[in-house]
Length: 223
Picture 1: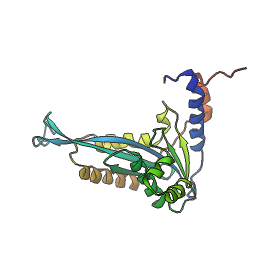
Picture 2: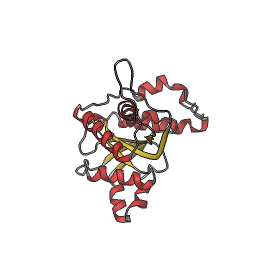
Picture 3: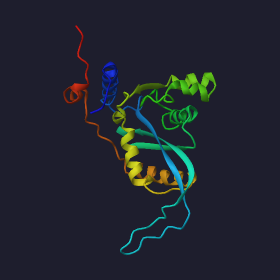
């Protein structure tokens, strides 16, 4: 069980139930529910050519490698639609988040009234970051098209984008990748294949479940 300080338990429960209620909403093209999360991938180059796989032996790599920096990966997914997109960037600053969000709003969701955005409480994950990347009028226009819901601290498991990041890690990132452009190609192919399969997420954990199974996290009402 998570270590939630007593003074933060009410805040945890509020954000948890808020996100769980969002997940009950039906598919709505005018107000799509989109989960956003990020991770990183260390770029690693080889000092020697790997030995290819052959009958009776797997592919082998030298334990010595070259560090080529780190790339950030922003995962956006619309679980009910079975759609996801991964943006690869050279950093994870506020401006990177802002450009990812603008691309969503002006790309796939340009016809939506609002995008219902679920994400964690990382300090860069805020509409305020839009003002550091764009002129005020553009930042305000973009911010007005967002409905933001934050997962609680210590509750990132509530973000369905983490499920997609887990699949990406297992199916694409579990190998050495030396260059960012190579990473972009491989991630792009993974995204294309997974979207073609329309792999969706069936979220079944509800507020009622939380009040039973996670009742120890709920603060005791004060009289």
